[in-house]
Amino acid sequence: MTDDVPLGLFGGLFLLLLFLSAFFSSTETALMSLNRYRLRHLSRSGHRGARLAEALLRQPDRLIGLILLGNNLVNVGAASLVSWFTLRLYGEAWLAASGFLLTLVLLIFAEVAPKTIAALHPERLALPAAFVYYPLLKVTYPIVWFINLLANSVLRVLGIKPPDGDGTALTREELKTVIAEAGAMVPRRHRRMLLGVLDLENTTVDDVMVPRQEIVGIDLDDPWEQNAAFVGDIEVSRVPVYNGDIDNLVGVVRLRRVVPRLANNTLTREALLAATREPYFTPEGTSLNGQLLNFRNTGQRLAFVVDEYGDIQGLVTVEDILKQIVGELSQNVSVLSNQVQEEADDSYIVDASTSVRVLNRMMNWHLPTAGPTTLNGIIIEQLQNFPEPGTDVTVGDYPIQILDASHNVIKTVRVKPPVGRSAEVGKIL
Image (cartoon, rainbow, N blue to C red; front, side):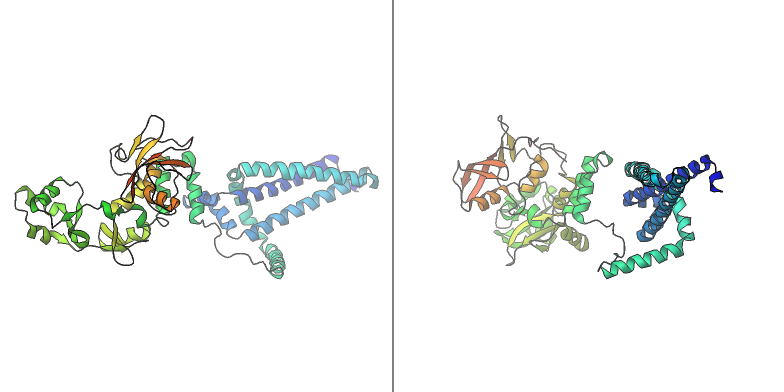
């Protein structure tokens, strides 16, 4: 009776099985290659196919069980059909040859080619396929459940337990890599800002603070006329008030509280002290993320950084932290012109007290940041002594020559950036 079956029917049935095998193979690759975050975005945007695909991928063992069940049934059916067809027409002598040809056909047209297309265009295949797999999983659930029960039992015997929860969460370093490689999808300035936010946890107040020796404030031991002139000329909004030395700190004054009195010549020492508020301290080593939260919770905008003995090491403001995210807040494109001067030989004369992080960000350099926060500190740490002018040292890949050093402080150096790492003075993010 089977001899009377038309040849065209055999061929049509074989092509259908081949198509189904290619469908199962390609959609498996497509679903597993989907960008989970883009899928989640599409799902929340109301895309029906994305919602179904996301629901299927929440339990990948069931989805894979369904796909493999279908794929194996189709492949076994194709092998049986070809064997039957070969026996009827050519006999057992050609059975091995037909098996080899079937394997070759399945490998090319049902595995390699479909999976390659699926890997290149996962969304085009996966989202429509979700409309097929979702109801199919409902229908075949008892069979798939039983298969997964057996498979998971084998895994438990081997000591393997399927992870619970969402396995797509990213670590901070992985997220930084995603942002850095976003390319044209995220503007460069925005990428820098996002990376700056992620770096807040790894950066401390020591890295951005104004060092103790550079703190400018009102010394009550100075003549009052000198202090009044200082209040009229200073451009910052808050300044410390102290007696003789910053360790004898009285507090912090907000200048807009006293400038009106200065304008009408009624500013006195007593009025200045009345406008002075208690200082706010933070321990050294505090992360910028933690300090930003502290500023928000306390309502402060300026903090004095102290060491374990309570000695003031520097001063940090909200603006110093924000610069790590958005870059230099000043609109002046020559913000580093007083600290960095470009020479004709492509080297740079640099104030050694400048923050290394500021130099890296503004000059597009890659000086090491794991250690001292200033160029002066890095050089002294590397040499293990105080260098004489003319001393040459290499920090990272950067040849540095000491130009001016006195009183145990390196004042100016010449930096020669490596080839390919030239910079523009004052270049903002």
